[in-house]
Length: 134
Image (cartoon, rainbow, N blue to C red; front, top):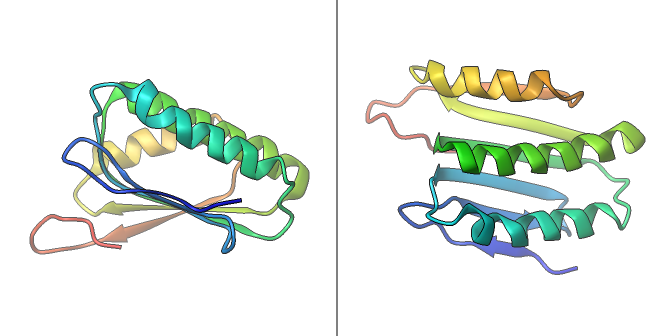
């Protein structure tokens, strides 16, 4: 299976999905004009990846600075796929990175995760310029 890398734009996330390292990472801003076009290949890739099946630990990281409602729905669908996989293999490790003054994003994240049974860790970052760097 090939790695999927999507370069960020002003409206879309940077996505790096690496099957060789079992590492999935999403960062940046997400408010694409057409969320279906943007996220559909990502959902298909993750669905195929998890069907292999992957038994080694999977590291999933998020460093999302802004996300709109349509993007949030797709992120939730991704998390549902991971949750289903984790229920069988118990090998998904999720990390959510956020800025210490971004309580809104943290609240959205906690609400999402309350619907799932995935273990997760929250890492708080402080920066002088207000930009999240991971």
